Length: 367
Ligand code: SAH
Ligand code: SF4
Image (cartoon, rainbow, N blue to C red):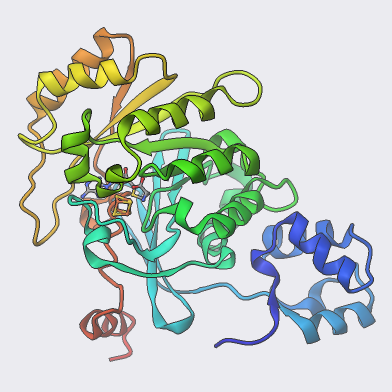
């Protein structure tokens, strides 16, 4: 349902302050409303008891608090949890929670589909549908908080957010920045900026804009150590080739106070980008960049010719990077039984096909 009302769920502090000032109200109302919406999970202005009845009524007339609806949630035996959210207009997105010791990471989507067509990515193969609003992005974190409820308040279950679900976050810049501002605001979710990570396939001008707009952690999807191969895997490389990308990474890493390490994601594709020669090339292009590397075993999906690198190839690759002094981790695959690998929110429920919508209805017991 689309209304003309402003959805306060997606406004960050600056947006809320502007909203209240335009109403002739004091800016501090922003803090009050943020706490109600994000910390107490309130959706009805009538419950906001530290505001006058008259103000609550005016808010009800011009604004709303509207989150995407959770239509399915499912846990996996390894603690992974997945939610399917229904958006306005009938699209669906997935959000996944991945616990790992003290850390609990929520993998969030920024778009329905993606326009960038990386050859190994099922989201890219499905094309672009639309940007998510800031309310829809932050609504994914809200859904997890509401699910964990009191347990989260006692144990802080969700400690990290990664924008590694569907979509290219830097191509939905303003909404993503507003959502990340809300995630890190102490009156909302209060996540540490270091623990919110934006993953990009390398939209160079937007990486520079991000330096000014935010200071979250950055992950860059590199996947290949030379332009010829990267052009093939990440077609955006034709526009922003590796030397420009690395220069932008350095600017990001050295901006502000101190240096910030950039995480480079590298999907391990059998026989494509996983040889010792590729590892040595990678070491070379990372020279001078404060870097960590995350080797991601490829997650196969139907209609792909790629396969996952062998464990031996991954270990060999890892050893070469480590020997060169580059911190390198291999991502474990998780949540296999619920189809919930992060970076692989394949939009199996994207209702571009009626069949998928029907599947959800069946799972909800409505069909
Ligand atoms: N568009 C952004 C963020 C979403 S993709 C980006 O590309 O960085 C999140 C991560 O998942 C990226 O590193 C992406 O390359 C990776 N990924 C995509 N498809 C994958 C697959 N089939 N197997 C493993 N990782 C994949
Ligand atoms: Fe888009 Fe990222 Fe998938 Fe590439 S890897 S198609 S940028 S979601």
